[in-house]
Image 1 (tube, rainbow, N blue to C red):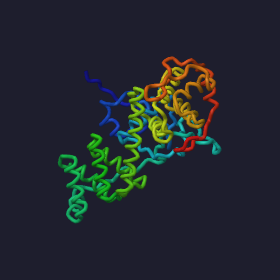
Image 2 (cartoon, rainbow, N blue to C red):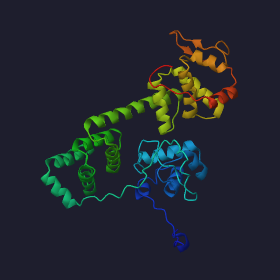
Image 3 (cartoon, rainbow, N blue to C red):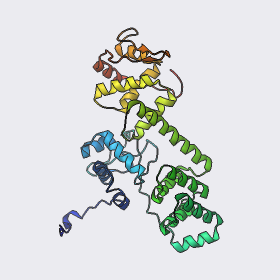
Length: 347
C-alpha cells in the first residue's frame, strides 16, 4: 500500500542531519537500538559521549549504549579520538555546565567539531595524477589488485584524496587496504575512514602503522582469551577491551582468578560488567593476591576462612564450586576501595 504524505512545516524549523551512510549501508543490518543511540548522539552530543546520560535518555542500559557507539565507530560513521579529556556532552535541552565542572571520563571521544565534508577530486584529476605520478599509479594498481576488482571512479577519487589531501604515503594506504581485507572489510568507505583516523593520529609511517596494528591485535587477543574463558559472546566495548589487556598482559592474572571475579560479579549484579570485575581483580593485584585460593580466602574475610580452593594435579589452585561468603559485604567493600595500579608490576 502506498501512502501519500507531506512533512508538517511546524516541525521543520529545527532539523537534525543524519549521515546518508548511516542509512544507506546499515538500515537492513543494524539493531534498532543502535539507531536510537545514533539519533541521540546527533541531536545532543557536542564533543564526547556519556553512556549513563544516553542510557537515561533512550531507555537502554549504559552497556547497550556503549555497544551502539562502538558499532558506529567500527562502521566508520563516528571517529574515536582515543582520548578521555573531551568536552562533556551538552544536551540541547540543558544549559552548558559550569566552567569548574570536571568532564566525565568517557570511553569515546567524538570529534569536537564535525570534519568538513571531503571535497574529492574529479575523475579527470585522478587520471592526470595517475599519468604524472608513478607512485600514485602504483598505488591505484596495487589497491585494485588487493581488493580483487577494478576500482570504480569513486574509489579512485578516494585514493587520490587520501594520497594528496590527507597526505598519507602510498605504502601507508596499502597497509590500510591489506589490514581491511584481512578483516573481511574490503570496501573503500571502511578503508577511507581508517586512513583518515590514522592521519588524525599522526600514524603516517610504516613503523607507526606496524605499532598501531600490533597494539590492535594485542588488544584483540586479550579480549579473545577473556571472552572464551568466560563464555561471553557480545561485542566488546572499549572498556571491555581495555580491562582485558590489564588482566592478561599488565597483571598477568591467573585464569581461575578471572573466573572467580566473574562469578562474584554475576552473583552480585546479575550480569557481567567489566568495570565491576576489573575492580575485584585490581584489588587483588594491588594487594599481591595472585592465586585463586588466596582470592577465595580474601572474599571469605580471612586468610583461613571460607572454602579453600582445590588443587589440580599440576598444583594450580581452582576455586571451589560453591564459595561461601557474604557478597553484599564484599560489594560494599569494593565500592569504597580505589587502588592505584602500577602497570606491569606486582604490588
